Length: 338
Image 1 (tube, rainbow, N blue to C red):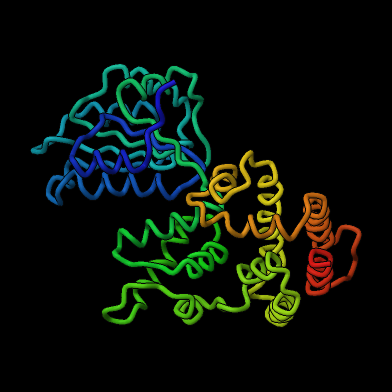
Image 2 (tube, rainbow, N blue to C red):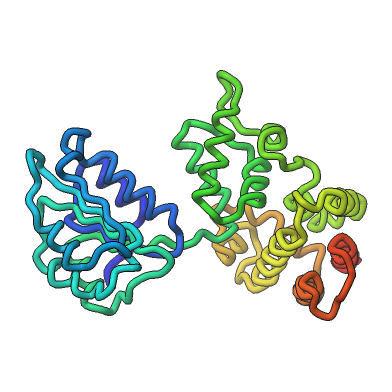
């Protein structure tokens, strides 16, 4: 099986003006598909060349025969022409594209944006793409990878972010990378002149997340078994339910304790060993899990995961006609801490 090409490799080649005749961009994460397609549209042709040599169509409005005809055209007063098919997953009889890909037009850059799924890599179409072009799969990031994405995104914009601020953003926005990029751009715009570092205070002011009363701080309180701090946070959540929905809190707690369960199975119980077991980018991200393993037994963690599932079911009305969300969370946190 061919080595999978990464987003960074594709962008590096595009910056060096090393082009492939076809880019088949597929997968569950729209962000990287959109970024590659936009970069090709923005940089391969100049504004004059775009008038005659840029074609953008949507899968639902065209068919494979029209796409092939467009791709077979020669560029006009330009070295290349660019043909972009957005929402390519809506194209019927997509496999027929394989015939064109056996001998693609070298002066055409065909970009297929196939979202919310992927093609079968065992089929002829995938084989032809890999032989003559770029087959890229854009996967959803895990929650543990979000702080790394945030830091890398801001680094490209020559901005730093404090670790706590990064965790706050990851927890608040989640794994929707297009939304995350939008929120980060907003934060960059609000930076005072001459300041290139994002702090928790700035996020509190501009995004509307409390720097002291949020899911990140609740998780820390549970790791440290700080009963007073945990109770203050859940009281704040109860008073501000709109900004702190129970479902988001449960998802974060479930993710943390599920990872904690996995951490118990790490062959090496060290920062490096746990980071490797959980697929974390750096050992410092494992520190919370190392501390939590000292505070919670494996049996207790299994009981907590069960309690979170139970709380989730009750919040959706299963076996619970009337208990409010605030009370459900209070009971859950009490169970976790005692």
